Image (cartoon, rainbow, N blue to C red; front, side, top):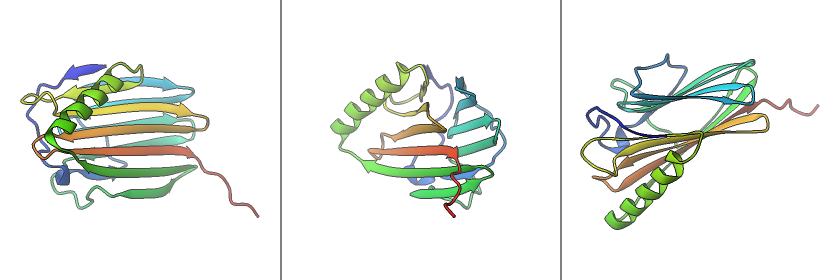
Length: 172
């Protein structure tokens, strides 16, 4: 699903992004509710990037990647945590592209996500290449999602990948 977000472009640099787990739902400009084999996933586009809410019989998970004033947790390159019965893994990558490469990559990602039944993308006013896009899926005992945050004025694309799965007990 592709939507145009009617808000100012809040996080104007890739370095403005921060990461947080466990935040309450923030006001969203667009929402996609998904049922993925027993898991309820809500993809949320914020004025300042994204939030994913996951609910399953084993518990809940809330991930926020956004421009959060006062946040002391910048966007990490990687995180691995235990959340109750789950293993949570997060990875982020910042890619800097030339203007021409950036425009092509932006169009490719928007087409991929907007045509996918588990995808949500929103473009921001002012640039056809200013967007946040999200894609979720279920793989066996894991729920996974990927996100892309574009910063056309810098030629930066921030990609994240998250996996939440059942914790596998250590062998004795």
